[in-house]
Amino acid sequence: MKAVNGVDDIKVFAKLDETTGNWHAIDLQTRKPYGKPLENFQPKVLSSDELQGNIESLYKTLDDDAELNICYATALRTAQADKKITDRTFRSIIPEVLNGGTPRYNELMNVKPDTLKDAFNTSDITESGIITFVSKKGYNEGKITHAIYIQKASNGELYLYHSNSHALDSHLGGLTTQPARAGKANVYKLGSEQHAGIQKFMGSGPGYKIAFTPASTLNARVATLAK
Image (cartoon, rainbow, N blue to C red; front, side, top):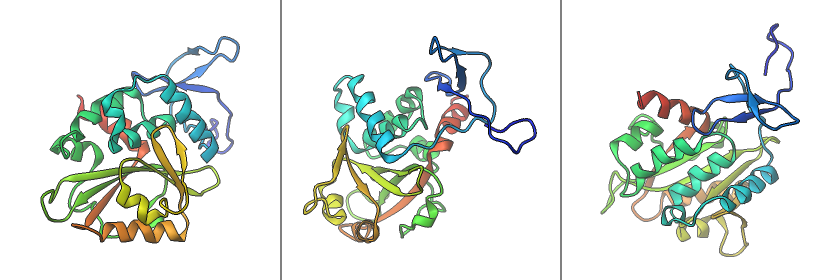
């Protein structure tokens, strides 16, 4: 959080309000939030280990609903564990992807012709976010077929979190090298092999275009479109 002079950083311990999506300062003794929502607050960027620990903690609090076993839920829950979205945002988005995606999902996630791309480029990943895969042709032409979460960790490294795509796992090397696991997700550090693997996956089967949605925009878009 920036000081009044806009230069110095001030350390603030804060908690995300799961209902409103606002951050509030917390009392370190009581661990309870207080005061007005913090303006322009930027939460700490987590390391890969911190995010994986948060995911394990989050999943311990969730019921084993069927929705948690789909790729979209895995990506969104990872965003929630990364402190980027609230449970309310999760609940607003998840119904929109249960049958191949709806126009509202596209609106919430900003998936449209001019945001869909034919190539995966790490330079596009300026922060953590969700990548939506859209089928180019075949039975599911134009429909959402997969979603993954890309974490840009505190050290700048990229990590991919996803579930329920044997085909993508095969291109990422997960059939020969066991990926890490966190909650429902297979976790891959994105090196050159995985970068090439994503592109190969995009060219396989019916072919796929992708749209990247920065996680920081999701709460705001859900709140705005709910009005």
